[in-house]
Length: 436
Ligand code: ATP
Image (cartoon, rainbow, N blue to C red; front, top):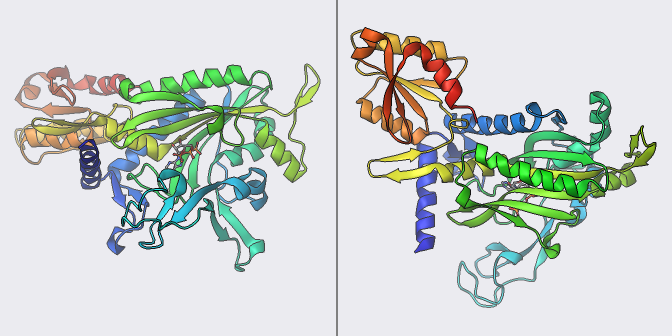
């Protein structure tokens, strides 16, 4: 029963996301391509808002983090140094009868195939590398293999000295980056939760060895707070510290931020103490000195790295799931105003008496500062409902009283309460209410 409800909630969300233009299946007219999605007019705005909020909290509100945008294709040796060529694998088995492929660690191999029910039908587990390969240049041979990056972090490590020198930074400092990553996941799924192409928002914070544990604690707390800014229900968030046997090869400590999705608790963000693993390996493989020189103590050492890594698409899904609310008469996305795709709609109550002109004038005063929407079609109740489904937090309506005293009604999405404010106060009202 719980599973059925979970499926139906996800089905409803997927259908709303398509209908309202948040997320479409990629190449849909050709039947789609597994686990690839496109962001529509509302989705692209929401994704941009999430990225901007992250960038603001990481870069603009601090004085110890610089930004970077490294290329997706990197020297193939990067992935040897990082351990991805050798170790970025998942164990895979096939059912010999129905040919379905599974991640061996995600099913019980002693039980029948979950798809066709055949007994003892699994192949031996094989290690499958999750990196996408392609060729650089016209010759498709092994000398020209390059990889689509499976994480953005390596672009940061190899630029450690470039950024440090250019920005004249001393430890501790961080480098933040938002960009695409690719993983040939064996079993993608749950809509945009696990896809093969996705966007990461990563920040690598370089510190003096010995200060890493203090900074790890600091970043755990700091990232925790970010989820309040997204407006998520705190009861659906939890924090999971990895036990020693769960740790990735590079990590001394790891901490996941998890959300309770309809399909269970799952990771949204990982915070890792990566020690000096990555810089040390890049030093070894590139032959370049990546140590830091402390000009006060005259010491030379390899910095430790605290990483915070969050999926942008997964954050967006989390926010949609959290916001999706069914009420007696409506479906409403109770998105935080800071990430809502459209900040406000402006309606004339009726299409006469100069009301459309006033509403359009309000819209043109807001445009440029806010993503706003004008709508004059259908009853005002239907217009509100349409905006509820799109997650628009405020609607301003021009009515006959506006003609007398230059006030409009503002209607709040979540409570549906209405009040009057002066027309000239709308901009300040929005500035005030959409801050996160
Ligand atoms: P998982 O255990 O879910 O595979 P992971 O531990 O491999 O994730 P990391 O390598 O720590 O993930 O990546 C950091 C973040 O990037 C994750 O917390 C998630 O938000 C995002 N992410 C990773 N893989 C995917 C994917 N296939 N699709 C969407 N987002 C992803």
